Image (tube, rainbow, N blue to C red; front, side, top):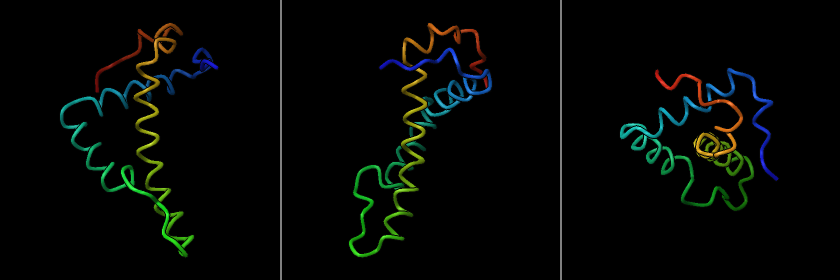
Length: 91
């Protein structure tokens, strides 16, 4: 089911654009890659017999999940069609 971006508040739209603007620069891509390595993007978060540690690892992984989600939304054609193309893209 497609996302309904028309319900986003202006500050939410701007935040999505900001994520893409920051993490799609060469520096941002390097930082994101470092976060992926550090935050369990490429390996399991599960530590057998250690539910607290597993939960902490999953929390770290969610940071990268959120960044990737925001970038994906920013590039969704429906996001642009919802009238967000006029938002700021500068820092």
